[in-house]
Image (cartoon, rainbow, N blue to C red; front, side):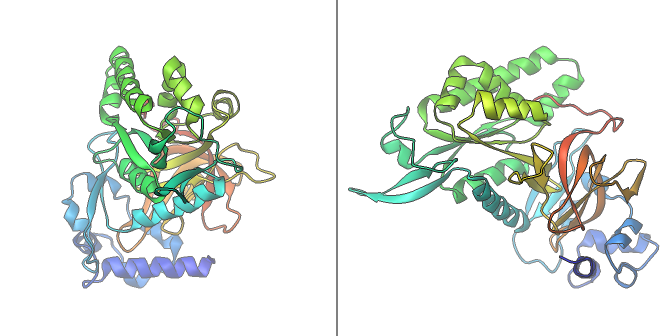
Length: 383
């Protein structure tokens, strides 16, 4: 995408959301307070800085007011984790499904496991496409036999109002897996840590691991999606680690930061047979999936945001209008630019190193994502 194409895309999105026939009640009301005419005066991406920060208002606005009148599809409602107060709500019809289709393609680029159909006497069954190429190595492991025709994907993470659980369920179905879930309540965990109840938080982690074990003991789990702290807890449990090391071929990690050394330890020493793929994102932004490593990369994990639906840039925390230089760290800023949802700009409470995007200078890839220092109370427990 060229700069002219991005600017044209911005004009189209602004015109859609501020036109009486297609715009949302929220933005049509908001137009009166902006002090400028967005349809006439927003000529490109840089003009989005003229809008105020509005994501905080989405904590209390009737969520139906965010739905554009020009959209006829049924909408779902999703919520953020609510770390700093009441959750921010968004609406979604098809955009996040399209985002998962993009992630699905990127997982193929990683060689991530996918169930492939094959035929044998008695009818069609399934085989796992090995994560690292070569022949199918599932035979001879625990839980082989008829059950392996329907391999399992275990999601140990948020579900309910949190979009990640539904996203993973969609992805598991696309890739041919039966979806098993152990629900994590991130708001409860964060509250425990904020209130100094670390012992209760540790007991909750044990509770989650025990539930995961009930699935690992009985189901042919080939893929796991979870957070780095919960993955560590599983690796520290002898029975859970044996189950993971014996047959899990793909692991998606998300929800908290993971150092380069921590990722190396997982990939090379603890679970070398599994293909690891990281996700960075949230309910607002969607998923920035880790891209495959390339020659010349200086970071072990680089996240690729879903532009132009979400334009992500790394900016100076003291001057969010200024983009940091490639290789420098800054604050993550996002802009949501779809016909379903318009968010001119929003500053995440995360820092990242800016990695130049190979295909475009219009948005950034991200590395070394971590909580932003000085960004207020930020809890990283198991999520």
